[in-house]
Amino acid sequence: MRQVLLGARVFTGEHILDGHAVVLEAERIVAVVPRHEAPVGVTARTLPSESLLVPGFIDLQVNGAGGVLFNESPTVDAALAIATTMRRTGTTGLLPTFITDAPDLTARACEAASEAMARPGGGVLGIHLEGPFISPGRAGVHAPRYIRQPEASDLESLTALAERLSRAGGRLLMTLAPERVEDTFLRRLSDAGAVLFAGHTAASFERTLESIAAGVRGFTHLFNAMPPVLNRQPGPVMAGFSADEAWCGVIVDGHHVHPANLRQLLKAKPRGKVLLVTDAMPPVGTHETTFTLYGHTILRRDGRLVTEDGTLAGADIDMSAAVRNCIHLLGVPLEEALRMASLYPAQVLGLEGRLGMLAAGHRADLTLLREDLSVQATWVGGIEQWH
Image 1 (cartoon, helix red, strand yellow):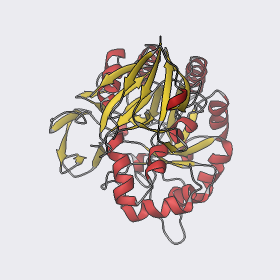
Image 2: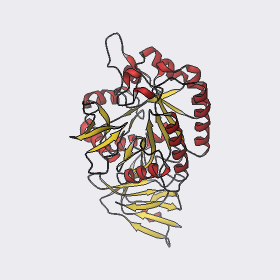
Image 3: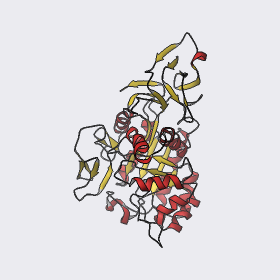
Image 4: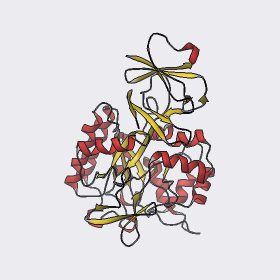
């Protein structure tokens, strides 16, 4: 069934347009046209005139939401429940994120995400495996007992998973420490369709650049779980600044990274290479004040999620809040902040031909924002939901 969305301003991913209509048919966008060119005789939805219709947000790093933690419940229902909660905050596509854990649970999470991805309107785009091939010295809240180096069987199973998800239109994103893996491992995974990010790493500047040449495409929450920049040891953070081709995911919650560092990163990187992630945890979308990770209690305090000794454990933020923070904390223009939450994550995954823009042929994943940039409605594959 064809329908027309009218009344709102429209951000295509490139420009904000007034007096335009978005034409949908089933799960696809058919056209974005001046209102007087909109087809007649079809279902029309008049949206609030002060609202802004934008490409749906895409989040590459969501550990949990709505009281659900993917590591605690590596199931199809859990992945879909996380996506449902985050949809209320404008995220129409995400990667459920499974951090370092036991191999059997990791395998269950991969199968669950793969199955959830096939659910129409589910919003699951694949899976993000954050670990287990990370630095024990930069583990953060990851359990040291599960951190390890890859074996031949890992390469076999991960390349098969990457290929299977890619054939289905999804992606495997994997966070690893470059100093813990060989270049041949990186190349094989990259060639299979996996998206590789450096994170939870103590790699040298030189080793990090070598890994980028071997297939690493970006950085997971740059600055966090990495050594600081020193005068003779620039490390992975400065490699992120220096490698123009590498994407940098950042958590813009005002707690994980000082805004001054993020402003300098935005100045240093080519436009389009800095993107937003939430690193969200179960309290997001709830009033809960604690949750359990690896059997330990994590506390929700003053916008932060911390262990009892004060270690950050994910983030208490959603993507619409991250967009607002980009504007108010970092001085990012509205259009660029929206691209950091939609187009650029789609490009990281190689899905920019069907996600991240309002354009003919793209999937009808849309977010409707109020004037204050809070979320009013979403469409996932053309399925409408008001919040």
